[in-house]
Amino acid sequence: MHPKAKGEHSPHRITIESSLHQFDVEPGNTLLRAALDAGINLPYGCRNGACGACKGRIICGQVDRGDYSEDALSAAEAAGGYALFCCARPLSDLTIACREVSAIRDIPVKTLPSRVQKMALLAPDVMLLQLKLPASERLQFLAGQYIDILLRDGRRRSFSIANAPQDDDCLELHVRQVPGGHFTRHVFETMQERDILRIDGPHGCFYLREESAKPIILLAGGTGFAPIKALVEHAAHQNNLRPMALYWGARDRAGLYLHELAAAWATEQAGFSYVPVLSEAQPADGWQGRSGWVHQAVIDDFPDLSGHQVYACGAPAMIEAAQRDFISRCGLKEEDFFADAFTFAAESANP
Picture (cartoon, rainbow, N blue to C red):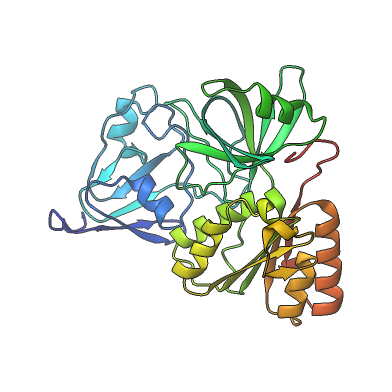
């Protein structure tokens, strides 16, 4: 018995059989996009009906399967109730059978070519790179994860993805110039838009633990802001109501290279606060804000962190000091500290 069809402009309710998770699909939207928008991670690859990674079965209800390649979904599979969720649109309420992505273990790691679509100087030593993936491919990732750029000599350079997963047409990276750095010198001196880079990912276990309701401290040092930006944008997209306090530390004002964006979040998002901290403010900065070590600013404002989660990203020294002091002085539970340390010196991660 099929669920009752709704009016042309009414959303349809989708139920995943195994988990009983539910989400709504507005008219014209696909099952995959609506699920991702609702915070339900379904596996996918190309998003245009070519690869079959998002294949699932319609147990009950009616769908328009859309345009897809028969290499990805055979006629026999379609007759058996299967559909590609990246291009299927519901015509009624549905019950579906599919695999949900459980954190990082179900997300495939891919090696893909990418084109440098945009380069923009965010600070004298920070370059924004926007990488465009092939039209037939998408990189599924969790906010906070990183990719490796594969160099011709076999070496890798790791950079956090600075955009949230729902905006995956391009990947945004924040590249800091490292004195003597082989790859970063190329970025700042010879790289041009439309250059091709090979990437591999996603990698890393720095992502938002959404099963928790605890308020969040976000701690960023320098370009450690990149994955923090992805976390914030993802949480906002999911209408996450957990309070968030962002502390961004840099040497001087130029190091807060997207200060206005962070300040806008504090204005626009309920429960969000932003505290910039400079360790070596210059007279020319005219700085009137907080000074010193960024993790000490957190301690000053939150002497009791026993009920919080902390997400920290930056240089290893900052990460180590924050973890030590938050746990020993502020009562943070060890399992509530999540970190991604940038190892600048070896240029192996986020140089």
